[in-house]
Length: 143
Image 1: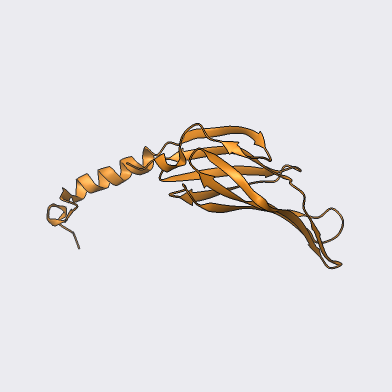
Image 2 (image 1 turned 45 degrees about the vertical axis):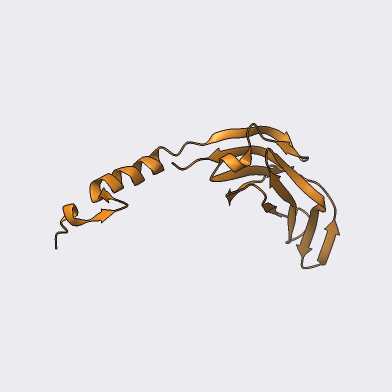
C-alpha cells in the first residue's frame, strides 16, 4: 500500500516538510555546556536554566563511577542525583546521592539531603557522606 504523501498535512506543513523539520531538530540538537568542572557543592551555570527545554547533569562518585540525569523544563525543579556502586566489603552495594534544586543559574544541594547507604547480606549501614560530584551540565534548546 502506498500513502500519497501530498495528502498528509500536519501543522500546516506537508509530510516531507514535517519530516525535514523533525529530522533537523533531532540532528541539529546540540547542547550548550553550562558547567564543566568537579564539585560536590553548589553549581553555578553559565546561563539561566529557564532558557533551556531540558538539561543533562553528569556526575561521578569519588571511586569513578559515572551517571547522568535529564530534567525537562528544569527551572524550579528538584532532582535526585543517585549512583549505585558495588561494595568492596561484601556482596552488597552502596547507594550514594543527594537532592538538588535547579533555580535560575544555580544547582544547589537542598540542606541535609545528601547521604550514602550500604546494603548487604550483613545489614544496612547509613552515613552522611558527600561523595557525588557534578562534573558537567549541558543545556538543550529545541527549536
